[in-house]
Length: 307
Image (tube, rainbow, N blue to C red):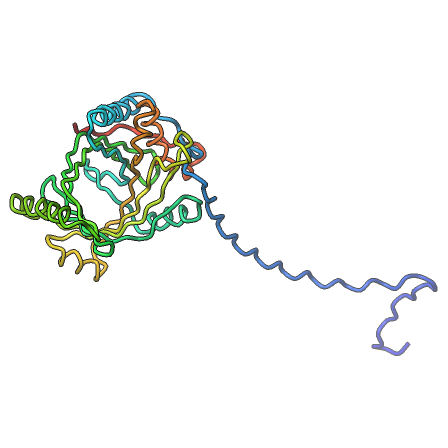
């Protein structure tokens, strides 16, 4: 063999398998795409959800007492308003309203349900002390109410965002209303009532509001009538209607409010105060309790009472 020639590789025996080819290195696996968050299940009704405990202790005693007073006033012929507002506590004071993201999340969640709902309606509310004049220009209606607060109780929840509830009992007595078409005598009486109020009290504030509502039925009422109502309200305040409308046009200082109100006098009359208290609380708590960490329950603590 000449010098410098490559050495021969050992011969492969006859019938022996050919040497295996070198395997190419595996291509790197593409990273998995992030999974979209699962949307909340649309409720058929608003019920207690995971993470909520029933009221107990002084919190239950206070809210039951408010329901008792509501039944007493109703028995005397008063028009009572029993409701809970959702908000936060800032510097020891309850402030009604939620952020834009929370407002949209909850209203879209309820829109997926089979709860009855209204369309958005706009009204102008003029506040004169305990007197409120509510005007709906689209429906051509005007109402005047004397609203008197009876009792409030503020509960601070264990929710990570610091959500708080304000349970309120008020009486609301209508003094007049106008509807189109209306009989002349009714219209005159309603206008006179408005003028009488205007002559005594000056305007303190004007509230322009847009509201959409969802009804919550009860099995304890015939034909599944609504016992509670959830109101979603966009509101703008001003010293005059013009000032409030200017804020609305500019998208400035928009208040986003959520409240749940007992709207069935029959439900209040036919159920004991503790059941009414637990039911109203459950409706509010169910909007937040499923968001609690697995190791923590949704609870509330009585923070403040005004009576």
